Image 1 (cartoon, helix red, strand yellow):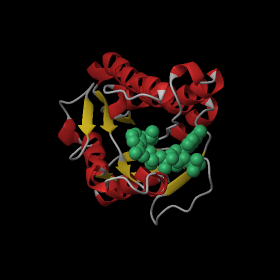
Image 2: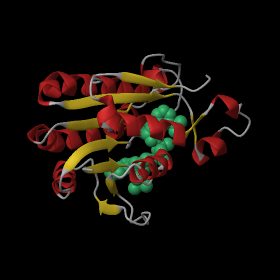
Image 3: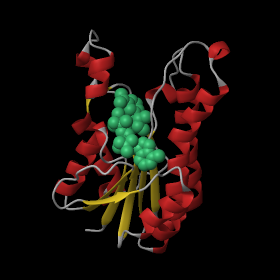
Length: 219
Ligand SMILES: NC(=O)c1ccc[n+]([C@@H]2O[C@H](COP(=O)([O-])OP(=O)(O)OC[C@H]3O[C@@H](n4cnc5c(N)ncnc54)[C@H](OP(=O)(O)O)[C@@H]3O)[C@@H](O)[C@H]2O)c1
């Protein structure tokens, strides 16, 4: 089984993704900024993925690279666009898009040079079904989708599958804390999304590239 690089692998969704891929036999390397403890058998690399060279070093450090999963991203909510500061808008674009770009730039030639592989990103349902008050986040996640489709156009013929999953609300500790009164029955467990990501990394998804895969659960 080849190796997979999981960026943001210590985050809320990250733990479930790392565990699903490890259990399926992948050799997993987690990239994060913090010096977090990784589960046994999982390699860990520290890199700020906003930095192009750090992202390249992280990718280059993985032997037999077969897949890259980028989970790095974030959410911020405010009012309508008229009250949004440019700095906050730009921060959303940067956090959600630059790591994906830096990872793709370093990894796509490696994946294409081998027997093909997979590049999986996390967009959001809001990218195609926007709601008010999150201009930066929604624009950024739509950008993630566009990036994935652009990569698909460039690398599909080399056998590299590029796909995005679109979560609505994931059942994470941060969401439980920020929305204590919400109806959690509509939230999606991170383990379920992790299994979809595992599928998109695997050869079972061989004919699927350029897809925006809904992972909405019952919502
Ligand atoms: N949670 C939801 O309901 C939801 C809904 C739709 C989409 N999503 C998307 O799903 C993905 C995962 O969400 P999550 O809730 O698991 O997020 P999370 O818990 O905040 O995890 C984000 C991860 O990214 C890492 N990271 C952030 N900036 C980085 C950088 N510059 N370089 C390297 N690593 C960096 C963080 O590491 P550090 O600890 O070092 O900061 C953390 O491991 C995100 O893209 C998010 O936008 C989430």
